[in-house]
Length: 98
Image 1 (spheres, rainbow, N blue to C red):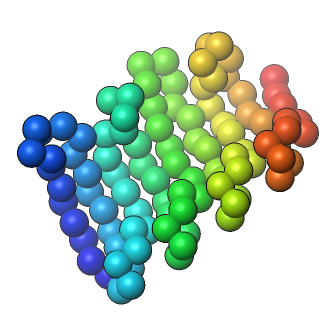
Image 2 (image 1 turned 90 degrees about the vertical axis):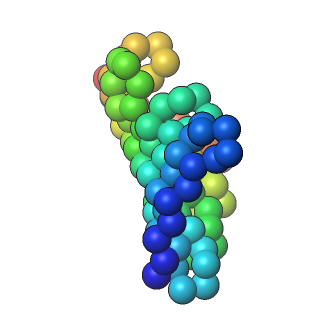
Image 3 (image 1 turned 180 degrees about the horizontal axis):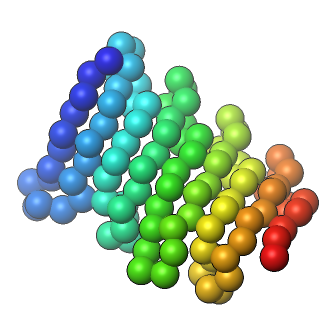
């Protein structure tokens, strides 16, 4: 395993990463493209399997399958609603609450 701390030359988007022995990123803690803090977990193929992000309203957790399709979302939605939904392999919502 290897740990990496990164800060770009323009001082934007710092990142802390853990990589496996093959050099594949497995965990990342960083400031994302929207300027929001994110915590991401990656599969052995380097694809994002889950991430936790937060904004000024509420945090949310997203879990993806091997194909990269979002299958579970829990937390705050852009509409302001707090809830959860479970999706099928096509990304269609099967269940949602509230």
